Length: 212
Picture 1: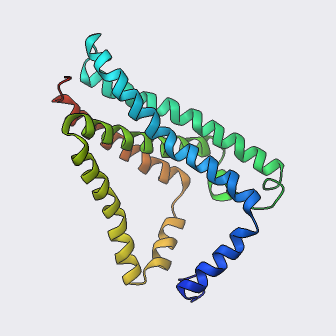
Picture 2: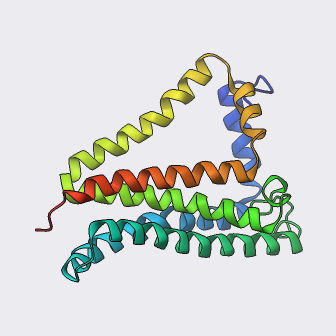
């Protein structure tokens, strides 16, 4: 509305609220599912690492083995959540958008390449979110709360600064065109590379961590 229809900010907010208010029966379940998928990785790895890492070291597991096992656990959990998302997509298609029309899971761009690519995309998106939670937990365990908060603020700024630059230069049409040109497999590959990099950085921090 703001960048393609030349509508003011307040008018865009008014139209958005008006459109959303008539779809509460559809929006509320979607928000609940989104919250489940958003926080599942953070909760899983935050609690899991805090409880399992000291126990694993006591059992003779090396830090390298623990890091690799954590990445594999992320793939397993992400694959399971991906199957759940695909099941919701099939239900969405059978019910013609949950009987109200809009589609959230069964998006043509995601599903057109085939079920395998769809599963890989959903899996690797979950994996990269899991690994971010994994890295934040390691920072918390080794350096404390304040460095973890600073890192989280830095990650937020790393997202906001490009958004501000794109907005200031009116580059949104070109940016959206670029991302629209990517295939699901390419996006999934980017998420996989990011997951491996984050896991490697987490291992470097974990290597010097001493359990107290």
